[in-house]
Amino acid sequence: MGSQYRLLTLFADGGLMMYPLVLCSMISVGVMIAKFFTLRIAHRGTNRVLEDVDELVQKGDVAGAIGVCYNTPGPASAILLAGLRRIEGKKLNDGELESAVATVGTIELSFLERGLVILATIANVAPLMGFLGTVYGMVMAFAAIEAAGNVDPALVAGGIKVALLTTAAGLVIAVPVNIAYNFFVTRIDQLVADMEHGASKIMSLAWDLERDGKIEIVKSGT
Image (tube, rainbow, N blue to C red; front, side, top):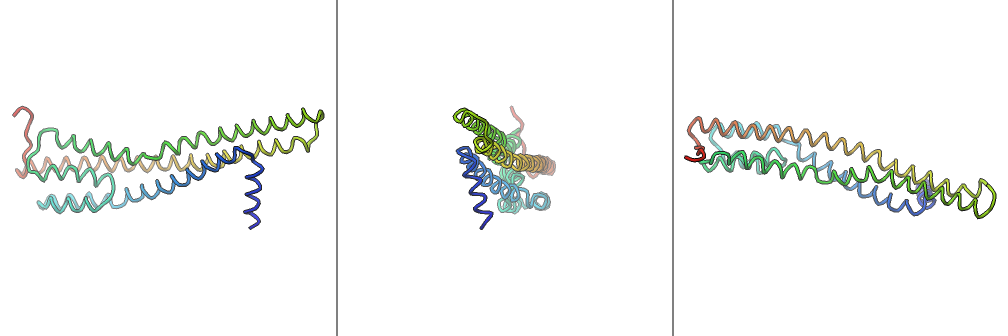
């Protein structure tokens, strides 16, 4: 209970800039939690779905492979699903499969990157807000000196306290947000590699099926 009151006192002593800083911290925490679970779900089961789809398609069970992809969340599954639905028709136009896979890949990448702009913005803006609070606190301190006509530590202590608290708050927010941002970017890079693996897998399956005469790829102009 004492620590709670201490935090509230620090918040009150920090002045007006503490309100937007706390708002930034609340937004960033919400985005980080949502992003963590989204990327965790997206990455889960990727290797398994690639193996299952390969096995089912080789057996000629394209419908079963579609079902596996449909029930497995993640960008790699979405790419495989888009390709398998084209393959299921037994007849493809030249470039149709590549176009479908590329379109789904773009959509999935956009979904994965959602929220990163918010984190990057907060990581950059929070320290600036803290520095703005620093300037405000120093202005308060010098205004107190000017009003009193002499330099008294008790007069400037309030302004300096505001300056230090807002600077500290801005940095405390920015550091973990920066770490989280870089972590999420790394995870997204891994998922992009999974998407490329899925695209490569569906293209290989299409070529194998065409070679075996199970599907037909119609060349342009024929």
